[in-house]
Image (cartoon, rainbow, N blue to C red):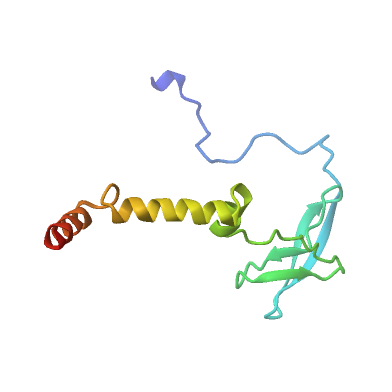
Length: 128
């Protein structure tokens, strides 16, 4: 096993390649300022789309670009409640009919928890 190991190199060590002949991508410095007046710069590619906000490395707040890039406000969908989704499928008249049917079944002891059936049965016996 010792004959197969690579001598002089360790995991996580430095690369033996040199940077001769390598052309780096064009870069730009983009400045940001957070609400707590922390200023910092991020190095980005010239081709990259520069975001309007970046997380501050000091405090974690949203820092805005100092180069005048504006945030894009996204149109938010209105919040849909369960009632709204139900009304998409049925009319209020249909819902009232279904509610009446289900209440009749519940009061008649045909559906619902068992403890309600026993109470209804006792009431029916007492009335009879």
